[in-house]
Length: 241
Length: 281
Image 1 (cartoon, rainbow over the protein chains, first blue to last red):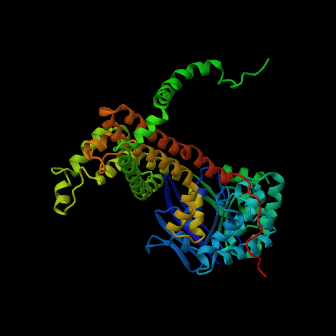
Image 2: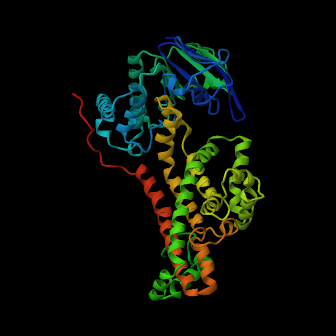
Image 3: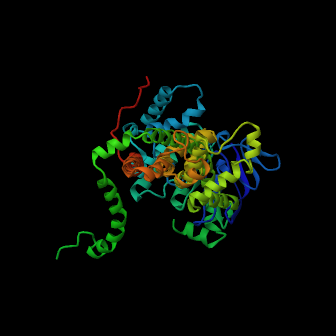
């Protein structure tokens, strides 16, 4: 499934003007802090209104300034896992996971949702976490739960904002494999922000977009970017491999 | 050598410097508490001014709080989610009743709803006459005490991470769903603290009420006004009323201090892990 986001947006005095695209495989977005990566993800999710552009996933048009289309986040079929995982601190792990089912499977009772959520937690070996609050989880556990919650609503496009950044080295290694397996098994589009070149290779990302100062300075395969970096940042990023 | 108990900055010198202000706050309260004997208080409570004033204060402050929470919550939410110049101006406007003397607010209300006021004649033609009624008491309380709730709620809403709201929306919630299922539960401690502060302010409202609602037993004479009236005839009654009002305020202070931290502690503390609610086959 082909997806693309070509948008102009403003956050405070900062402007982004970026075009990113991909298909069934995970695409990686890199760039220094303050490059506008998170803003771009929020724009795609529908959480931040753009000024102009077009966002589509397959035939599904999420935003089109020419056509006057701007779908609400709940109509976009997008999964969003922000930095810090975005688990609701006032809900248990079970209720966090069940939260995503509340609106998608209309008419089903709270018990049904919790049953489905419990089944999913068992699948990802997190059954023992069901009654815990997010504040009591480790970073790796939070990431697993957040990812499970986002995938439960079967989004067309998954947005992951630095999914591995807050983890210690050993957990990051484990989670990198876990993430790569899940994204590959899913076979649907994903856009992953990362600061670590190892993620690019682990996810087998066919395309990397490098963003600086609100614009995409380079797009291409990891090999292209490594061989002919368009900026110091890109050179430095791939040199750390 | 032993470390001073208060750490580096909380030593004896700091305590000495803190004592004058502590005394200024504490001595009048101690004096009030020790001014009358239990029998004096019982006498005061039997005084004809007492029961109507207590009942009126209870009714009007409950009504005021309901209005403030219903109308103030959307305003607080809007203030917390926008950084436009208009919102900053609105924020200043909301804060004004805190710095403007209550008596001035009373006059302003009269200029609005009085017989020659901005809206008074129009309302009068509809048969609505606000000044010097119980509704005027509520209006005065709402105007002077709403800022405390709105400030508290807006500050609490501001601490709700945008990303959590976006996630809630991508998981299928409508704007209202995200608000009630994510923003409100997370902001609840701050909303409760703001409401308690606001309630305490409404309970003590005197100046605006006197000017706009008057001082009529049973319809506009709240506890503070009853104290004022009693002071002219019988100091014992005034003291008894004052003690009851102080006790009510202290009762509000307890949830103000304790409840928000209890509510937010719930979010941080590990809870026992119950079994999943139901087991799928």
